[in-house]
Image 1 (cartoon, rainbow, N blue to C red):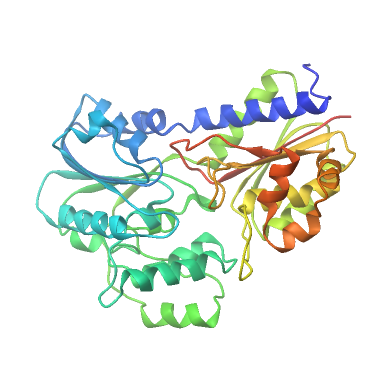
Image 2 (cartoon, rainbow, N blue to C red):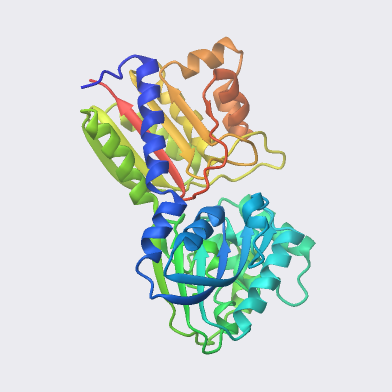
Amino acid sequence: MTDPLTPLGARRLLLECYAAALAAVDARGCTGAALAECAPGAVQALVAGKAAEGMLRALLDAPHLALERAVIAAPAAAPAALAADPRLAWFVGGHPLPDAGSFAAGEAALRLAATPGPRLLVLLSGGASALLEAPATGVTLSDLRALTLDLLGSGLPIASINRVRGTASRLKAGGLARTLGARPVEVLFISDVEGNDPAVVGGGPCHAPREVGVLPERFALRVAAMRTSARLPAIVHRRVADNARARGAALAHAHGLGYATFDHGPLSGPAAEVGAALGAALAGLPPGVHAWGGECTVRLPLEPGRGGRCQQLALAAADALSGERAALLACGTDGRDGPGRAAGALVDGGTLARLLDADLDAVAALRRCDAGTALAAAGDLVDTGPTGTNVADLVLAVRET
């Protein structure tokens, strides 16, 4: 067995496992495999989310599908070769808050769906909820940004957030499907949500909304006022990639190096509480590489600091790991955790000592939601840049005997 038991070795192993996970959920490759099962013929497409470019390239690669026209809602401008393609209407939307580009993309998507044509392929990935939007009548961009900001800081899970978002949208919660008439449509999606629910991914533009758990009153009133009984056409939804696939690839890499591996499945809850619990539990888990996945939540203070949910989780875990022969990585598979550049963080038994050397208090940083500042000082941030995919967050840990 390759020995990861030095701090450097443990960190290197976890970064290798993370890279293997990202490769396994590469948007172009996974979407291409799914498109190979589609019936041949002419198609039009709506492509939206952080994995939009990779999913679109897979469609363009497919020799049996003749793309006539596509609307793309992506987080960045089109590469030159794609920008020159007259079939493609490319929009750069805002994330995590929608912007005018998101609105333009949403209106173009609704027009595309409502216009008679060949089969429509909808290729969705995480991030589409903000990148692609068409507001309900009377809802302004300022209204929608304020609602989204309130939801993102509420500590609610993504299913609840997207259920409320749907009340302010003509596109989400099945809104796109209502414009289709008899037009055939198929949805392929890369899931970034627990349970891989197509009603939640990208706001569920082709799926009826589901009821969620208890909401704060201000949000519950919105949902109650906007309930609809309108039936939607039956639309096939096929999952292209998800967090379980990423976890499996990470652990397969570790197993190939001789380590015992353990998949603990989904995790959720307040990021700091989950991180503290994982850090404490790690000492009692079997030696080897452990994996969890999902999206935790953060309730933001009025003036939050730097960092996202993965950094919050990792910093909370670092306290319990102090002095231990273990390391833990918490990163977004999209390469971005919160509003900064970092994908997340990788902490080990020496993180707390490095923070003390920098005269920083982990508990105070967690309280301010400023984990990013502390972890940067410890040298523990992970920066990948955008990965072009999105299957929620990964938490990987290695513990030695």
